[in-house]
Amino acid sequence: MSQPISFFSGFQPSDLLFLAEAAWRTLLISGLAISIGTFFGIIFGWLLYEGRIWASLTLAPVLDIFRSVPLIIQLVLFYNFAPILGLNLDPFASGVVILAIYTAALVANVARGGIEAVGQPMRRAARSLGMSYWQDLRYVALPIGGRAVFPAWVGVALGVMKDSALVSVLGYVELLKASQILITRTQEPFLILSIAGAFYFALSYPISRYAARLEQRWAHA
Image: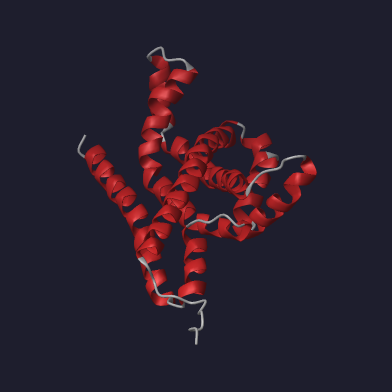
């Protein structure tokens, strides 16, 4: 008499590799979104600072929408409506686009606060030394302001890394989606989620520690 075949099986070493690959996908999509979003966020922050009136009437409301609407709604709407616009994007590309826009919306206020943190006397002194506007912005406002708001940016980056788990609703197999797949098969949620949490910690902790060391170095510079 043949033995019955069970759908469920225990956690296996190959499952750990599956989670590690998913962690890499989480790091990849987060890294791309944070890098692109930070770049555009700095530009948006500068526009908010310089174009106070027109930017508050045009750019600021758009950024507020992306900051206010839940990220999962943005992901689902964009993924389903992008084909109507002729954009046939896979879950990874769609996730990068929305996470980058979301990051840019958050970083914009951080960047504006950083520029505002540099006092006008210091900027006027830079101009009096013969610096152009762009030299003042590059060598004075952005470096000094960046140090002031660096902890806030780190918080945004770590938050976006955790929020990348929401891309799983599009079918992208990142760390959370991989955990759900294994939980369904193994019926061991505590073990799987513990390992997934350890991977998230392994991704986030080095960033926070490096940021803390960088701040200490700046403080003693």
